[in-house]
Image 1 (cartoon, helix red, strand yellow):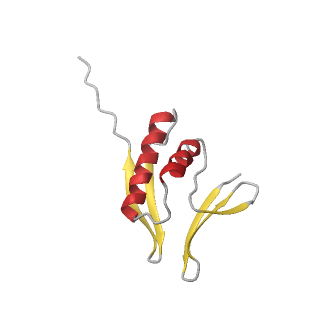
Image 2: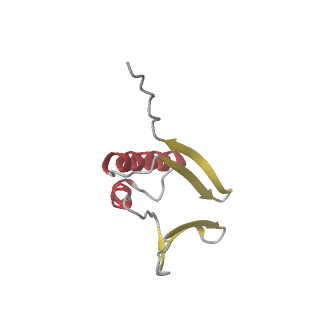
Image 3: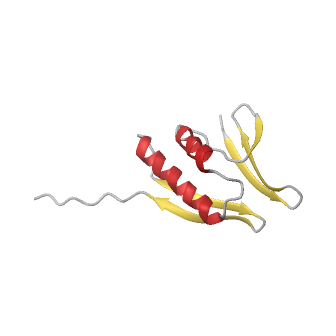
Length: 107
């Protein structure tokens, strides 16, 4: 069973985002998330997403979503990759890593 978020760019249709669920249902969306963290991610995106956002504004929203997931989800993933898909292709934009555990010196 697989869920997929598929992003692409077409000169005629401009950017597109699709969600394909585990039973092969396809939905065209403006924003997407899946998994346990999606409840928090989608509520943040519903409140703050705008279709005319700049890259910087979108990344700021993604950072807010990541912080919300880390705060509320007990088993939150430790690292996140932010990727951009636009007329210039697909690329990694940034990594967001959890704070590394500090080594504790026993006394």
